[in-house]
Length: 64
Picture (cartoon, rainbow, N blue to C red):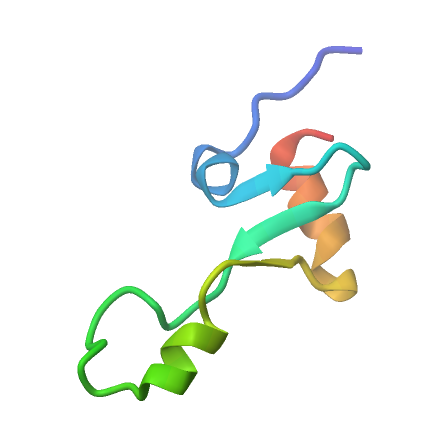
């Protein structure tokens, strides 16, 4: 069975951990940062796991 190419937009946004979990950057951390409080910006820092509801669709787009 041929392996599909991953979706180019998705492969840039998702990283796979050693255990096979999917990690993504949090939203709302790109622009208009002077409007957002320091607490909010700190909370949005770092990565988070892809939700269980979205995991199946994301894996499909990644060709997993």
